[in-house]
Image (cartoon, rainbow, N blue to C red; front, side, top):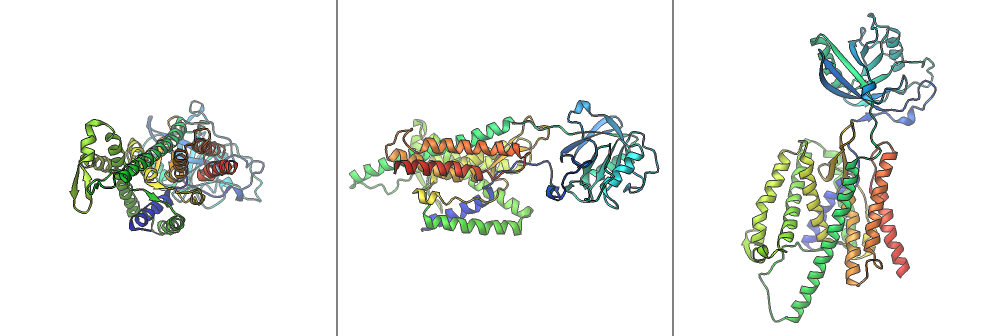
Length: 484
């Protein structure tokens, strides 16, 4: 294996070890395993996220997200059906004893600890509270359940847990203002959000474009090689293509990829911190710049206005011969990546991230070639990371967030699909008789099943390759066995 292949495999393995699974963005971390808290009469609610909207002195203020308890009454799902109710602070704070003050329909805020959750709820209901907000002693949310031996579960007020930081803010509101009121409701997610449709189209479209680009480049390279063989007397020492050299993934390379990716995952687990995230951002920007530059040069060089600039080269220290067209588009690509990195936490930063990500994926699928099906059967999956993913904001989801897909869920199956179309073209197979059409359909169906499973499992993250690989690889092997 030469130095170019080794360097590229190490970089690609490090990248894909972060991004081979796809998960949605959650509204908050929730600890506690459902299996440890079986349902029983009086304690059989489903765990739901709850919006807690606040008003201070009649003016709408901050909104918090909590989680409903297994016990108590079910919280309404529509905002219009939720009452705006005065918020009071419990005395005693833990509400392990009946509150000293009569609440008369107030929502009471209490601290976690000291006694059972159900005991707090019964005391609050006995004092006249209409709902109870229990503030966790940690930043995470906690699923409030019932003990196995509990019997006093006839609770008729809703119970919601809020994270520690929400409790601190609410307490400041109560101590510094005359009136604080809250509204509790739990809006339902739509069955399908348009973001998932667009994300599906982005993933499928990226593989489709990358596959045709890879096959077209391979055909052009073969044609040029034939021409050079016929004109062996002529030499072109200064000629250089702007399209990056092809890297073939051999069996050794595939094994090396798995080993490096596994080691990088361990390193990621041990060193995950702010500076490590910043390092990933820098690496993503470097890859995005290279990808965007390669795509722009390949696209512009097709037009006669830019052909001369694409075919004229200048020697640059360290980098070697580079076309004038590459030099012209590089500052634009670098500026784009830097602007995204600076403003990556803004509302519309996902657009820049997706552009850089798609350009990077297109370039990788153009550069990396799977030479045979034996190598393609070695796909492995890892974990997803940030910012190595495509994402689109959930437009009609009341909980907001993003629908996301890791680069690995596009790159790894894309290698197989790109191999299929190159094989079909070289073997002069028609679209219906070849592998590519069925591999492409299998990928689209596998990704669609991923989103169906995501919705059926109430938004819990799904490893997309778990569904995509059996469809794409299985269908390809099936066709191969039929034509063998």
